[in-house]
Image 1 (cartoon, rainbow, N blue to C red):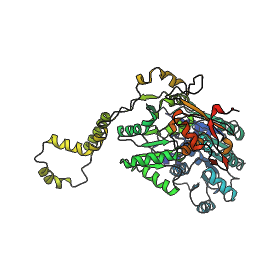
Image 2 (tube, one colour):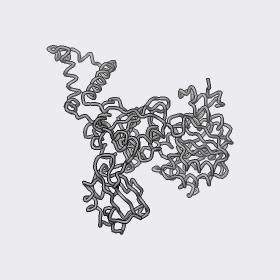
Image 3 (cartoon, helix red, strand yellow):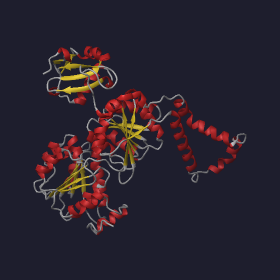
Image 4 (cartoon, one colour):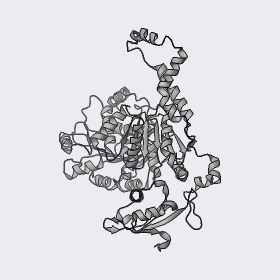
Length: 553
């Protein structure tokens, strides 16, 4: 059996990690540690989140550091404050108790003055987010000329967040590094370019298939109409009474709206999005980690870097536009060898995108039936009974209440008592679900279109005005484009906000530099034109009209 000792980890570190319960190296640790201990090789490690990457680079790094020289020798760059703090905490746990080795975290949202003071005291390892590190470099508050090792963790996430130029700036400012270690869950072309430009013949290790999903995760989807998406979410939550997870939304407005609706109905949840202050975010994350919250409702940007153990479910309220984002969402569960479930709520028009994600993660998604009202009540009932039977009565003086209880319940049969307990606990559920509708899209209702939904995103008639989904669509021209600072998601949100319409009335959006074309349900096309045509955007008069009245350039 491969052990950390056989990989070359020294006695002091072995003692620390054994006290943490580390027994056998994970695959990424087994492959990476012997290479990284050499200290001179560039390295690329491709593995899903939750596979032990921090220990894979952290243990050899701590062993390579010269403890007698108190200056920054290693730099770990990661995308978010949460991950920065997590890595720092892990390294502090890994290091030998006897070693006077210092690890300093620098990140945005905290006092830069305090961080500068910490750096001035001297440190061996800096763990940093890109923006704060560059700020410190430009203030000449950090010296990187003696950095021997630089680690880029969650490299694909940093590129997704727009840190490509920052990463290149940091690499240019560490000219004396002996080796660069890059860890990533996926390998987009931008990472390959960084690898070629700044690394020399890196030793590359891939655990599993590139971009493939974690084998410990069961990928499921529920097919329903767009109008039933929220109700489907509620059914999934109610059908899994022990759920502890994250619900991903595409926009912060969706996150806030869903959170407010669920809180009104009594769920222990909070939203996590970009409008929260750092103090609010820290408070939410503290509550989530201590499990006083059942769920987080989060946007992708807000959830980046979250590393919380024991998450049972990740729920995609809507599928992400970027298929690689799915890998990062689902990677929040099934960590450290545990199993997890990644759930997607999908409408017929989104099935094609689901198939694209299936192909990318090389995993079959299991179609699940949306539970009916009786199924939900039955699941909740037996969960309650299990909790009742397992409840601990050893710490209270419950026997003092027994005489009163016996007197109160003397006239009732045991069956009546059980029924009253069930009624007290489940009256709300039973009332809510007694006439619950079937939210599933049955195969016979979809008819012969099933295959078309699975294979094509959008089929067109000869006139180019009809989808394979429900309803007729009209193509509209609008004189706004990428030059106006829009990308697809922000443009979609802009026109929906302007017209006060729902997202499901829209079809394909084609964007050019100066103009765009929007497909919209015929029933609301005139309403959209009336709401948008003639309005002003940054000093420009917006022109929107049917595309067939405009010569397309």
